[in-house]
Image (cartoon, rainbow, N blue to C red; front, side, top):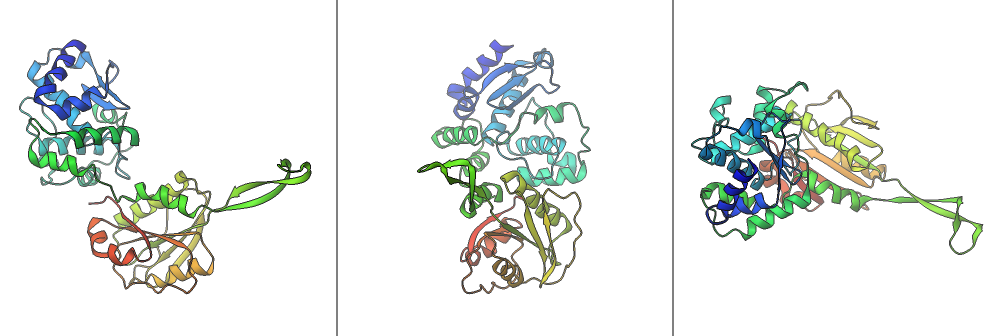
Length: 363
């Protein structure tokens, strides 16, 4: 089976250059313990010879092509859509492939199988399919196996981007899909790709004297010092009436992710026309009570951050409010997280006057 798969990939050198490039960047690995025929991730293309045995060569090539296109779209190497389970993201990936590439011998889920229209993004399909088939945590079989190796990998994504940029002949990949793949190489404005840099920009430290560490100049005769990072982050969540319940759940997914980025504690305020609730978190919360749902004003959370001298202010919003009044002497760094790309396009010009701006990848 390995020889047959390698012969297919070798043929792509002339006929399918981008597919050939990304396939050669992955190690072809046998795996008889998975239920899906082929999957990718962690710099491997894994195949199950038992599942593939008896498949005609034309169908086998399309199975392999589907995985190469999936890699070109970087589904295995960029962060999974928030709050979506394995079944949803696997199905959404397959739907994206079948919606953009014609397979004659390989059958993948199509948008119509879920009652969805064509022409949308992988993220859009992920959220829609998650609503239809929410993952209960116990799903097994091909859908879970397909995405089991998927994890964020900037090095792999950069390598794929290089192959995309260098492509001159797209083979059988249609122009629309090629344009989508090329567009994916451009800098993203997703909050996750911006948050780590924002954290670094607001990192502060406190110097503590200690005799457990000698002074570099005087040894143990003088007290040494150590630095303890004490960055204080305030997250302001827009709970005005224009924010949907689903968007609020994603907003609080961002709040929970702050702990993954190294913040030991996070202070949170809910706001609409004023601050309706304030509290502190030391771990991601399983349930949050929402108080508010009125109009929107950014003045109160910004004043709150100023009064309490926070290092950073993360504002999760749809942006539909007047520009804020910034207090004189305000030094807190602001990161605006817009609800979606449409909100970003409407508001980023004025938001950039006050800080960094990014968007959530939501439908």
